[in-house]
Length: 208
Image (cartoon, rainbow, N blue to C red; front, top):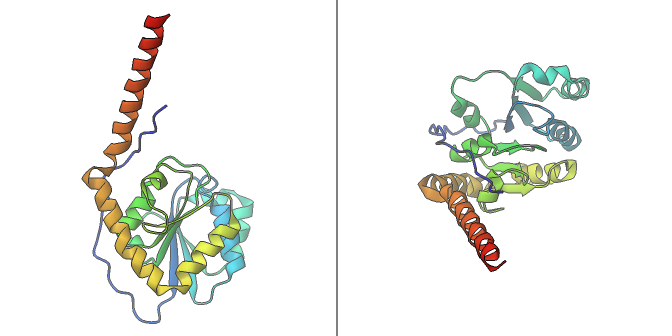
């Protein structure tokens, strides 16, 4: 089996500096609230109870069909659900950090979009996008289903301006490297493995 990443160019807009004293904004983008791990994120956010901080969830109205998610939203006035955004770069521009805590995902394009827009990011390891990134250099990687790891990663970004600035610089560089051919490498390696397997199968067959 060969894992082939699905990836295109990310829309990027210049980041406008936020006013001094603005609230820390953590953003997340994705449909399928259960697959995207919103349950664990909302639980972690509630336990963190960060002062002067907001969580913005860009998703569909499906989130309102799950009573447990509805209750977690109702319990936290510093969480907002955002509907359709014509230019997703404007959403990323409002974020001081981004998280994609998926428990079941394919590539995770919103992670790459956020990084391309210079947003310090957190993501779970169970996605093909994470396999193309260097942990703690390009973004913070955590395990899925882990409220504690979400809390730890968010707190690191909340407390450390230096870390946010470092990831804000390295994230776009990592995405640029992928756009310049990095995404092709998994395809090339996969083809090489398939050809090697075919050659071995032919040798075994001829020796039989």
